[in-house]
Image (cartoon, rainbow over all chains, first blue to last red; front, side, top):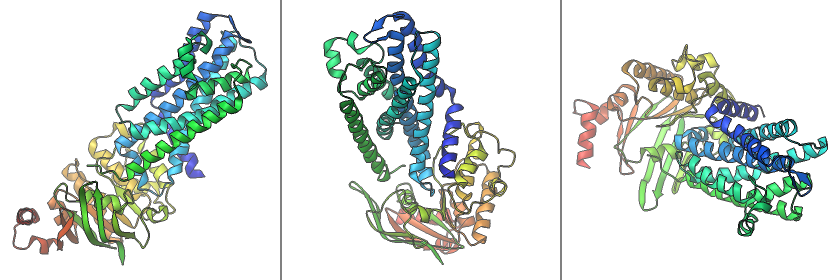
Length: 250
Length: 232
């Protein structure tokens, strides 16, 4: 237990001392939120005003970023450095390595969502009951688990230098198409049809559901899609992990 | 006492056979140097010994256990070739974390002293010179007080002084009854340190003995080694 806590502590220190990684992950969603939130102002979209709606979608955007970068890119880099291999020569339970990164991604997610709540209720027109806020918070932070699995799968297949660009190439278009930047109903029909196949869309709909602004799809369907995606990415990551065992370095 | 034993170990990567039935014994209180040109199979042997890779066939036992088992690994420490360490953590933080993996770790100040890292405890890994970084890797390898120490080219990039200091530490560990497996391209290092030398070529052992036996009539171990490779 102590070992796990230490692993988390040092994972956290590592990230904190790399502001070039941690600041963009934390602040991009907030800047985007402010930009679009201010641009669309207090317009209504369905049941809620735009600044409330966008807290849910930029929250989704933010937690996905924390998971893909914190998990995916860091695993790819540490694999490339041979660091993961050094750890594997020790008796450290391999789970500790992943649990620490998972905890890290969730802490980052929690910070991002909190920042969005603060911005939304000060600069924007967000007023929501505490219970609703807590529900939205929980959905987003727990939802990041799916994207940790996604990041892990990428981390085991992307190279240490290509991981960050690869993640961006997937993350940014996927976020746009899923309706995380601009509400999905503003996007062309063809794009909306693609969105339903993307995991971020399902997390955003679950998040929007907590504030009564989802498109009315079934919660079970969204949860099922997230679970299926988690299993799929987890399986891909597992294959990558096993593949490393057979690989010859140098 | 036998620390580790390879029995007829083979390892294939697709069409390439890196190990062709390796038999090898590492004893406690002994430093065994594993020599061979690049591609001889040294790295494969080390990876299998550390439980990082599975043999294609054959068996490896470390203190009677499977090195892929975490319990066995509590008794192994390793310096891997060309490993890089997260740069933003301090030397003592790295050692603190690694010590937590082992049941009976060495006290921090002993690890620092043994690895020659006095005064660098609070430095971040990324701020250290190449030689100092190597010493941190050595500290991580010994901090769990292992009974088998595996050193895969541990002194590459070290200056003479630092290399000699590490030799002294390694010999001291052997003196305390630890088993050490060393791979190196510096044959003078093997000559100075090893109790026994094993020469590998194309995945097989081609010679085995004390440094003096391997050297034979040649002036140095290096001369004997070059002759041996030319002959095979």
